[in-house]
Length: 105
Image 1 (cartoon, rainbow, N blue to C red):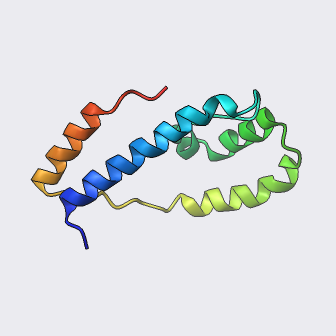
Image 2: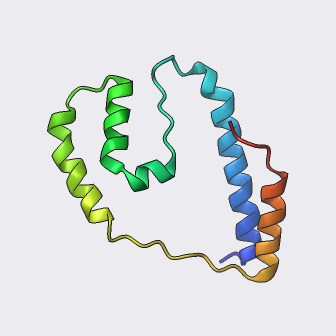
Image 3: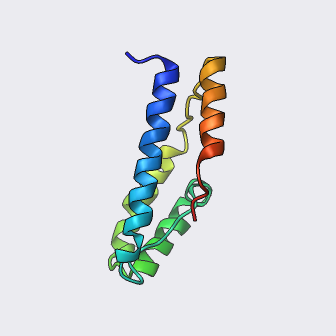
């Protein structure tokens, strides 16, 4: 298993590659076919946020899907993420790499 420093390097590189590919391909997404959602909005108001996605993308069937989505959102309320505790060198490197990343729009 890679050490934490290597994991940090690989994760940040993969994230940068993914965001670069998305940024390059974004212009190819037809107008009205992309809805951006803040993670904090999804966590705070999952039903309202998913309903907005359905509405903005013109997806039919919200009334049929709502109960299943509500059940999943209710189940997810008990989820508590486990914070990652990095060794000092890995945390420092992560902060350095984050500071070097271009801002995402």
